[in-house]
Length: 274
Image (cartoon, rainbow, N blue to C red):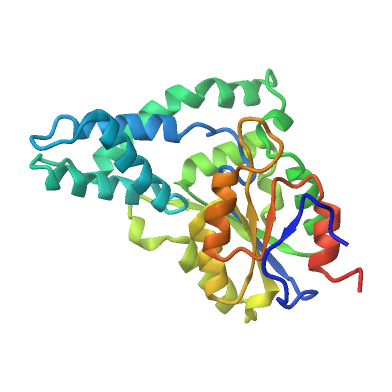
């Protein structure tokens, strides 16, 4: 029996054969970048307000939130490409998407600088900026011989740095992957296909944990097992209902709030209770 906090949305998938596990980073394991939308959305709204044919500030907030949410899980550059298109459609002269991205990263660093520096100096404990139970599930998977991978839409250098600061980088024997300025050379879909091909896996031998639409949808598309992490990044407990709805639409087999019940979850995934 699964505990009440683990929601079985789509039962009937093949269990007991998992060999590889893919984790999203921000919102799934790391809380360092909690609130990033509150940096990206206002930046984009201010840019769009400078175009000749812009809507009201309130309407722009709604439009921008919608497309930022839609593209969450992909590399950040895709949100900036969309911003470029939105500027052009309103009669503005758009900048290069990489220029928008670098401006966003500057603003985001102002938002998260104290968190990262606090982790590195020990002023902030790692547990404060990890989704609860993250270390426990990574340790259990490692001890069980499952090869773990970390994949993020955040730039690769930041993913490495923040995973090290959180003390989890060593668990990802399969590698740590993130966004590149040459964005066409990386995507979560490409990584999933590489894992399956490189190790000659069937879909049900791969499990993905993520709080974004993209990694869940990509995993389901290849027959993998998709665990939606509907984490409440502010309260660090309970379900974020907006995430839950999106993850179910993406095809998640199971919804969890965090990894507090990782023992029960892994028993179920490895069919140890049968």
